Length: 432
Image (tube, rainbow, N blue to C red; front, side):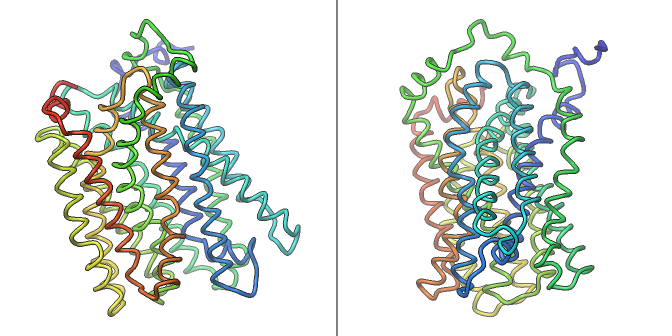
């Protein structure tokens, strides 16, 4: 092995290190976005039936089911990373993620293998969810441990930043495919192409992540907690994990609403064209990518609490009125304006939230605690497309998703007040 391969993150380019660690995070989000974008086509392939609403709900429920495995993945794989190291764990999660992606991409439709088709797709989604349960936590903790002093917020923001690149990439592929293929071919087989592209990216991601080095902070630790010790500490710190979960609910609900749910909402509810809604999604991804690092850097200067409070309150006050204005007269321009506003709220909140969550977790269970809080929240937020569809169907109110986002923001506000209720907690970022 070359000398360069033994270099630590502190001695090699920080940009290269960040790129290596967030690469798998890109794949995880790409897979989830592609499923969300093509939920309607997947519903017709794997969940056929006379009731279009029921078929779509089944497809969106399978999308959400992947999130139910995240808490288990957070505990099992999070404990593995806290004991064996950040590098080994991140390589393992990438392998599991790739296997789940291949499963969804290659399974024949219901017409070919019957009920086995949706069962196998569900298993693929559960495997993706299991691996994703710790991917976010592992990446966030790694970035926080290699960050230069006073810049943890900026560094950690690139965990979410990589997700936005995935959002844009997946949406652009969708735009190209919708221009090339007729609608019937997109429904029949074209939706599989983005999944297969994800599979082709996997070898490259393995190549760059395998050269990832362990963080100096982890190597300096004298004691590596066992699974039993980690579980004991998690129980002792259940309040922090629960409050952290509340903060993340705001992030997951808003993120999946403005990304994964946008194509379905735009086509099925607003009756806009597929290209229009995918172009809006591209713009949302770019917008998120701008606001996340800016907010992370701002929280490094003024603290996490002011940023978190400001944007939860803004979300509570504006999310429903914005969506209500959109559905009153749907158009490409209105959808773009509303989504960019919601993107601003999400990006500025999340830029401070991710680093804040790494700081409040006890160091010995930093990965497992972060991952469990995040994963528990995504079991709720990940069902946002299904919940939004159900709310619209049962209430007849097309703006109901805005109410759902407002409720999530209330939870985020309460959790922020709980976690940052003491002066020591409020000033923690200054010494982190």
